[in-house]
Structure formats: structure tokens, C-alpha cells
Image (cartoon, rainbow, N blue to C red; front, side, top):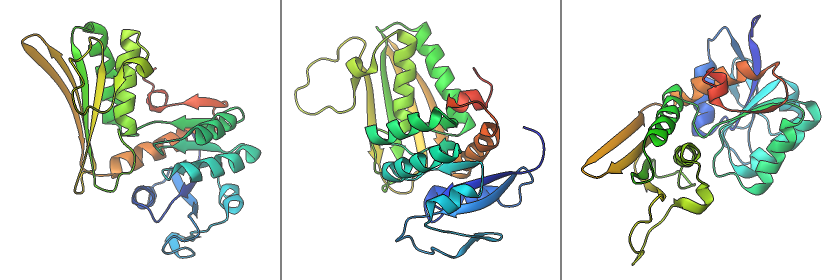
Length: 264
């Protein structure tokens, strides 16, 4: 998109990703933070979070300030804002993970009238990893055991991470499998031998790990490891801001970062 800066509404400015988005948007000439929407009990509601912008708890006021919003919050908030955005045909960039059926339905309804960019991870490196993992899965048959290990900070609530699930879906799609049938996200006790074609994912939580994902392909006498490590949340924020600028003016529908990066 050409022209001046795109106005963006940030959800959850008091949260980890909200703060990262505000920092990443500061001083850019292609993005202008126009509004910030937070929960009613958030610390700092009403304070200035960007030049001339004070956080608010009023959904309609926040959405009215910009043609696109960025959401890295929680499923309940994602649902409420997507429903309100549908009436205004506001574009959305959604990085919230662990979405329930209600949130998915709200985003699907929004996508009928506005562009919705959703991704388990907004970093350029992770999206390259998704492509590499899919290519590896296409080249290796199901005699190669596929497993994913993900590490995140101690406060992450959902498991496996959205990115780990995205990697598992990429492997399943490349192999023509249904992840609901072959996915295994927990093992305990006498689970028996590993079935051929199973795709496993393990979640590790601790400390302040921003994010680490490794896709393993185990063959007879050899092993392939594809890894991405994030050390700064700024990579996700910059990717989400790029997606927000890209989304404005697009036709209604569901998109992901591969669309934004021109990789599909």
C-alpha cells in the first residue's frame, strides 16, 4: 500500500506483546498508533501509551480511530472485539493463540466483510521455518517420525503453542494427513510403540524464554532438526505491524503471514 502512514489500533497495550507493538510502532513513518484498547482492570488505563494516545476500555471508540487493529490478547477479548469490528468492517491482525470455537466463529464472521490476517507466529523467520518444514515433510515419507518441541516462558497459558500446532499442520498437510487423527500432544504411562505417521508436539515452560521451536524428523540412522529461536518480541511486533499495513484495502477474507510476505 502506498501513501501516508496507516492508523492502527493496538489491543492490550499493558501486556507483553502490546508493549512490544507500541515500542515497534514508535517513530515509524508508515504506521501511526491511533488508539489503544485495554481491559477494564488493566494497570495504566487512561495513561498515555503513544504520542497523543491514551489507553481506553471503550471498544467502539478504539475501533473508530483506525481501519485496522492488532490483537495479541486472549480468546474472550478476541471474540468481543471481532464482533464489534464486523459492524465497522475493520481489518484485523490476530496473533492470539488458544482460540476457542466462539472466537474462531467471530473471526470467521469478520472475515466475511473485512480482511483478517491470522498467524500462530508473525516473525519472518518462523514463517520461513513453516515453509521448510512442509518441504521436508513432502520429501520424507511417514517412515520418518515427525516430532515438535517448543519452549516458552513460564507465563504462557496455552500448550502446545500456536506455532507448534502450525508446524504440525504443515507436516500433516504436506503428507496428506488429518492432524486430528495423527496428532499426539501428550504421552504418559504405557502408551505403546509410536505409530507410523504420528506427529507429536511437546511443550516446555520456564523462565523468560521468548520462544523456541524445533521440528525433528527421525529416520533410520539419521535425524534432521529445523529450529527457530526468538530472543526478542520485537520480531513478532514488526511482523504484525507489517501485516496491518498490508491488510488495509485488501478484499475480505482470511489471510496469513505467507500471504503478507508474498510466499504463496
